Length: 79
Image (cartoon, rainbow, N blue to C red):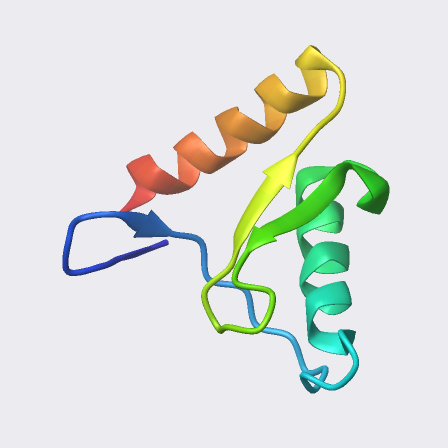
């Protein structure tokens, strides 16, 4: 996790895919899906598809969303 100047926390993901024809976006979705333990179909880039900083929306059953949120909160508290 990295804090921005305004205090917002961002999860940093690094992928090797180039930003050509959506390859990098697909790689980000695949990496986050693996980390979060959810299917790629439940992750959508809702902002920043052509930018380095992206906003993801994760959908799915409430219990899986709770687990993903807990994993993110754990990263926040490790800072």
